Amino acid sequence: MKIIAGNSNRPLAEAIAQNLGMSLTQATIRRFADMEVFVEILENVRGEDVFVIQPTSFPANDTLMELLIMIDALRRASARRITAVIPYYGYARQDRKTSSRSPITAKLIANIITTAGAHRVLTLDLHAGQIQGFFDIPVDNLFVGPVFVRHVRDTLSVQGRLPEGLVIVSPDVGGVVRARAMAKKLDAGLAIIDKRREKAGESEVMHIIGEVDGRHCIMLDDIADSAGTLCNAAGALKKAGAASVTAYVSHGVLSGEAVERVNKSPLECLIITDSIEATPDVLKSPKIKQISIAPLMAEAIIRISQERSVSSLFG
Image 1 (spheres, rainbow, N blue to C red):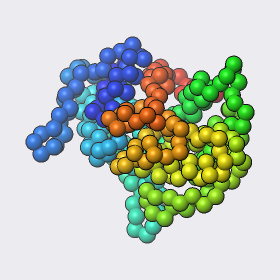
Image 2 (cartoon, one colour; image 1 turned 135 degrees about the vertical axis):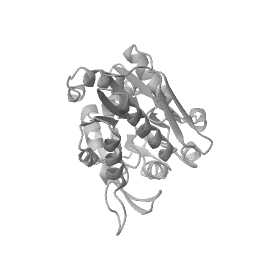
Image 3 (spheres, rainbow, N blue to C red; image 1 turned 30 degrees about the vertical axis):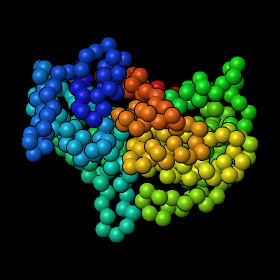
């Protein structure tokens, strides 16, 4: 087995390799003067089971091209099997036609990755589960929920017991299934934020479904981009009498003024994973904490390589 990493999230790739007791495969990934990507694999990979770690996060087009060119280089170097490990799947929010003559870009990206030569995909908390069906190759979609559940228990438990009045909150209707699963594991209540999105990146909270007065609220979402939804929801929860509001997010995109918005919000803490490499602003924020998915990704990689069950990780 070989592990190779692009430039998108080198710290995560190194942490995964360390969990596996391996070193990253040596490769050169550089740019020509016009920013054209060049890749050269510096080790023999003929007949190897190769895992390419590359989240397609900002800058999405550049990181995607790196991934595609690495896959092509490995295919031409006669790798036996190539698994694209994409902790954050860019363009996942474009999973359906939202208006006339609009694209389904998540499907286009799936086609491109398959055509480049990937034999399978390993990803984490897809924005929409149906994206797995956009691929004609096997896709393993890992869930970060168990990692969040462990973190909640480790940080909030007192003498082995969680505080009374814990409520898991979905910031929109689309995340109810995810929130319900976490609420069940923590034996907590469930609330839903009903919102109306006027345009991309902006949302207006309408009202709260569920009891939050005097409760400790934990919001759960898959992506925080502008963080407008989370911050507006946190404000609405506090206005409704919530004792505290914390948020757990799988992918901290946090673009533009998102970090500043979080710092000024009623959120006590925003916990994100390292599926996307943290920016300096994220690292300096007193309200944003990052937990690692490297052990989870490493365990999935070794199970795939050994042809063992991945779903049993969440059983």
